[in-house]
Structure formats: structure tokens, C-alpha cells
Length: 273
Length: 273
Image 1 (cartoon, chains in turn red, cyan):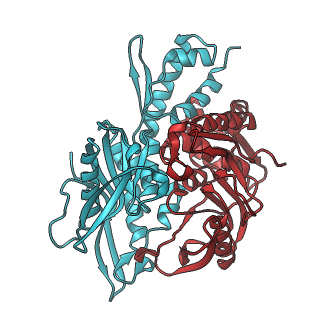
Image 2: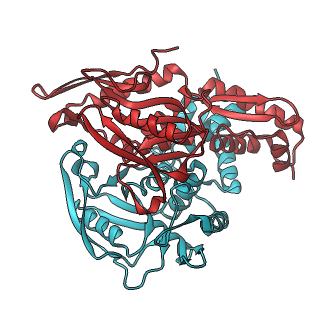
Image 3: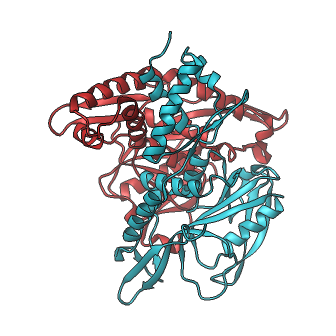
């Protein structure tokens, strides 16, 4: 039975949203809805226009016999800036101040709405970078990695500081923790990453960049390529960072334990290009 | 300017999918699209019918002045069973066998498509249980907690075995690790969970149930209530488990390190009710 346009539009929207970055042929939709390709084509034009005008992203049309459509989630920069401004305000709350000048983030990194936004912002930034996998380090980077992986539709891998029996054979590297000058070890399950993959490194927080640099070394050990480094928040750091090229959503400019104040401003993610 | 029906249907679909379990008033949509409430009402009827027939879930209508619609993601049991059968096959692959009879899972728990399905299945099962928060233990439970939290649209909290300076004050409990008879400690940041919350516990794997039981104790310490326990996979266990009431998606029935075979069958999630 032929499907009505209204039903098709609803079903196609949810289908494309759940399959970002994946090529879907017109034939697939035509068969799914027992509809003519010309009708499907018209549907897709409406969806494309709406996705664009509403700021969800781009519906790319790939022509030819092996062609089809691909949904690339992309958040308009204006909207991303608004979201980041909101985050700055939330993070500047003095109640977040912890002993030692640390900032409490864990509650934010457990909120699905916020993670969805963070995932969209980072995935938009790297949508053209041919990312094959997202990498992070346990534990607090995981929610960010998963959110980004969800919008780029690529797997994420978790580097650990402690070896676990359930990981099988691992590859490990030593790295210098920039802020504490200690040598630490991180490892990744051997079977979790294919050689030749382009890997995007994400994490919740960057100080000296030692952890990110450690992940860079791991990427080399796996014969993979670094596609970029992006952190949720960076802090001020006196000295030279172990990595120079990275994006941050937020910049913790100042933490004053005496006056109990935290100043958070947007990071460098929109400074380049 | 008035918005066309086709555009409204696409936009409303994505809006509702990104805001599950949240009440949205008709007025909100009417203003957003500069359309009459009667048109919005017709749109929602079409969406409700399509969501139901396509197996995305239920669009609940709450009548009255403070009413509106609420999207409850629900996967049909038939489809969930199919997904679980596929998972059984994947897990039964002898390449997953690790020394000591462990089963390698980490690659699966890093695939966004699979996590989306697992999240949908668990969220469907608990959609009527008034869950306020999802709880898991670091590190491997985190992706499952996040996926479930995404579909229930409630925050998730991460219990840790090691204290971190960035968590602030914590509450800790001791628990008996059922499989190894050791006493271990787990802790949760004090500010991460409000008293009175109904908490759903999820994890990647259950053997003796000691970890889940530890989380139960933590929930009590926070004056919260257990809404349920659900694990991705459980294994055979000789002896009495520390928790009796739980759901599992998969059951690792047999692991034979000599013949190098793993037998995985569906868990108990569809056995009850």
C-alpha cells in the first residue's frame, strides 16, 4: 500500500536523524513506502529545505546510480554560541568551586539535553574531517565521546589508566602529566581500533594537555591519524602545553578561592577558520 | 508567517524526538509556527498515528489547560526481541573469548547504533516506572547509562571505585564483590543525586550481583528509591546472587575455554509481566 506524504515525512525525518552521515538510496525509501521515486525526491526536497531553515543540518544529495542522501547534523554557529554562553553562565556559579580550585562538572556531564548540545557542536565542527572514530580517556570524557560519536555516527573508544582483564591484549604508552610532572601510563584494547583510522580526541578538561598528548602517542602506536582534539573546557596554564592545536568549548579564565569566584568564557572553538 | 503542514510535521518530529518524556503545550507549537491550535491538533494526530504504526513509541495527549503532548519512546517487543537475537549472535562469536573465560564487549559498547537500540529497549521497559535518574558504575556501564538516560530524558550519575578530587564531597559504601568475596568500596559525589529520587541501576555485566547490591546501598544512603536494575548481560553464577530482582538483555549461558565456544541467549527482560 502506498504511504501518504505526511507519514513519509515523519518517518523519513526520524530515520535520517537516527542514521546521520549514512548514505541512504532513493530506492530504499521508494521500496519502504511503495512510492514512486519522483514522490520520494519531492519529499526529500521538503526535508532538505526544512532541515536547513530550522538549523538541524544539511541533507546532502549524492547523484548517480549509487547515490542517495546523507544527513549531516550541523548546528548554526549563532545557535552554538548561544549554547556556549549559557554554559559559561552555569559554570561560573560559585557553588561549583571545589577545594584546590577545581570546578565541579559531573552533574552537567550527566544531563542528556546538555550532552546532546555538546555532541552537536563538536560534531558540526568536525563533520568534514572524515573522522572514523572518537577517542577519550576514562571516566569523565566518556559521556562527551559518546555524544559526539552519536552525531558523527562512528564508534568511540575508551583509553584507560588501569588495565582490566575484560579488555584483552592492550597497547600502552607512558605520558607526562603536564600539570603534575609525573609519568603515567594509559592503555587501549588492541582490538578496539583499526589501523589507518582517523581519530578525533575529546575530553572533559584540559590543563597542561598531557593526557591529550598521551592519546596522540597511542594513535601513532595504532598506526592511526589524528583528526583533531576538542575539549569541553580548558583552564589557564602557566607554561607550554603539550599540545598546541586543539579546540575548546569553554575557557575557565579565572578561579579565585579567596573571593570564591569562577570566571568562564567561551573557548577557542570559533576563533579559527 | 504561517508555516506549512509538511514543514511543521518535520520540525515537530525532530523536536519531540529530542525532548522525550517532556510535556509540550499546544500553545507552544501554535506560537512557534504562527498556526491555529486546530491545525496543530491535526498535525499531532498524524504524528501520533505514524509514531504508533512505525513503532517509535506513544504520543500521549494530556487534556486540559495545562495539558499538551508527551512523546514516550517505546520499542515494540517484537522488534526488541529481534535486536536481542542479533546481539546473541554477535556475542557468541568465539573471537570474543578472553583468557579466564571473559567475553570481550568493549567494541559493542562503543557503537552508537547499538547503544541507541539498547537505550531504547531498556527505556521502553522502564518508561512507566517514574525514573528520576539512572545510576551506573565506572567505566563500562557509562555508555549504557547514557543511552538509557537519553531516551528517558533524565540525568545519569556515575559511581566510582576510586575517589577523585573533582567530585567534591562523596558518600561511600562498602560492598562484597560476590564473585571474588572481597570487600570493596564505591562512592558517589554528594551533590549528584537529590534525595527522594527514583533511581534505575544499569550496568554492562552481572555475575554475582555484588556491584548492583552496592549501588542499592548507595541509593539508600542518598534517601532515594530503587526503580529497578537492568544489565546488558548476565552470566551463569553458582550460588546465590546478591540481588534477586533484575532484568538482563542477554544471558551468557556457557563459556568453554577448551572448545573455544560461547553460548549467548536472550536474558530475562521479556520473561516477566
